[in-house]
Length: 460
Image (cartoon, rainbow, N blue to C red; front, side, top):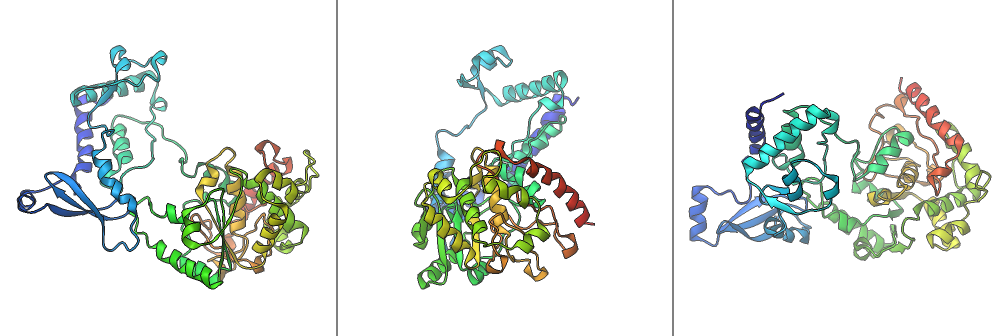
């Protein structure tokens, strides 16, 4: 086991990396002299909300303005000053009072969040002692250091990396699987497309603008969401939203936003809104599928060639399985709040020309979030996409004729192992999710294992 002195030496050297970077308030002698003679100095930095310039005077940030290269800056950068000086920031080591008194965890005081300030030496002693205790009494499986959530941009400020590096010098630990951004999508998609897909590269806006007749924004607010990026956001996509707005005005592209609220994107583009009751996406989708199937708006040959599970899904769609309920637009309407005729019209619109479907991650951040996510990913790949030069076509539970469609990759994309035609991943199957997870047809579960076998054969 590592001695405390050696552990702290490594911990401090690791932590120092976060302070070496050019922080906003770091000023050399020359900069300090300049600041004393003027109204301050301007420094460039970056954030999740875009690059910016900050005026430093008297050792504090006095003013924030967007970097002039950002043509569509977000007003959110005006909150950066508040982040730095917010009274809620934890500036010193703090320890929960009841835990400090007993020097051990006590379940009866859980939730009592009275914290007291301690010195850095006290905090490090407590931290090291607990690492020793957990490792000796329980082993690495009881030490969780898997937090991978939001952090400041840049690796100098990567709190997760520094934490795991420091704890790793003491011993092993457990981490987590997946993340809270796309947790449900990461669970279901490998069984559908052979890839988590949610973080795969998307298709360029140029392709979308040049090849799309109808754009469906399903549970996503682009004008709001594009303000923020995992790295320092450049906001270049807003220029393409302006072009999309022009095409809407000219009648070249129709945009429909499926959302229970009036979004910033709807206001910006002047596009249509299709209201839907919150968390009722799957019934709406099933009502669409029922229409497409009954009106023969799908490519039978493609389904037979590339897809598994369709024969298990159709009986469920038609009410011939255990629940004995046909998923008609009338059935869906009572749940999702959309008129049956509107559901049918929506389905026909999707099948009438090349359609781009953009789904937000929010739709899978709900109970049974795997269902709308898995269902939509099928529909995104119903026709030729940006890999069409190799004639890749994937099936959709929307059952649409691929010759009328052009599903382009939005955030998330085509499985990245598809390099040549012969390696086409045939794990694709019609996994039409139901309104309740417990009602998945038994035959559908069998198709999962069949798909895995198919995948191995297809990639040889």
